Length: 243
Image: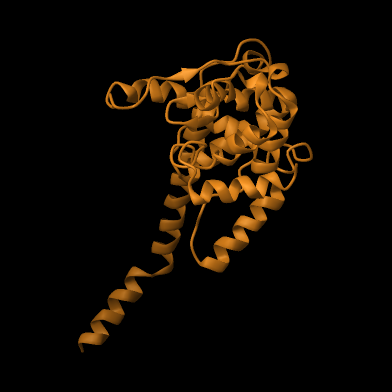
C-alpha cells in the first residue's frame, strides 16, 4: 500500500505536462541569462584602439593590487614601469613563448589543441580543472577580468580574446602581456621584475635571467628567482633546454 502511494505520486510528479513545463521554464531562464550576459559583454567591450597603440594601460589585476594594498599593509608597494617592446630582449620574448604558449604565432587567440589536451586530462582524472590558456587569454584576463575560476568568466575571456586578436597585432599583445604580467608580490611587468631581482632594466636581461622570469609565471608569488623552489628550478631547466 505504501509503495503504491509513492508510485502514484511519482507518476504525477514526472507526468509529461510537468516535464514539458519544467523544460519551458528552463529554456526561458537560459534565454534570460544569455540576454543579460550579452548585455554585460557589450557593456565591457573595449575600444581596442586604446590598447592597440600608445601607453600601456593599468590592468584590472594592478588596480586590484592597489586596492588590496590598503588592507594588506605588509605587502610591498606596487612596482610597475612599462617599457616599449623594443626595450625587451628577444630572448625574454622567446622564453615567454616557450614557457606559456608555444603555438602563440599559429593560433588566433584560442589554442584548440591545448584545450583538447586539457579536456582529455579532465576526463582521465574525472575532475574539472582549468588550463590551456594562451598568452592572449592571459592578457585579456589580466587587463579586463579577475582571478575567479568559473565558466562565465572563462566564456568572457574567450569572447574578448577573439575580439583582441582581430584588432591588435601579435607583437602588441606580447608587449601588453610582458608589461602587465605579475612576477612577484606587487611586481608587474618585466622591467619592474628585472630591477627588483637583479637591479637592472629589462633591456639588460640575460638569457638565463629571462628564463627565470618566464619560469615564475604560473605562481610568481611563491615560485620566483628569490624563493628558488623545487618547482621553480624544474621549470627553469625545462625552459632552458630551448636555448
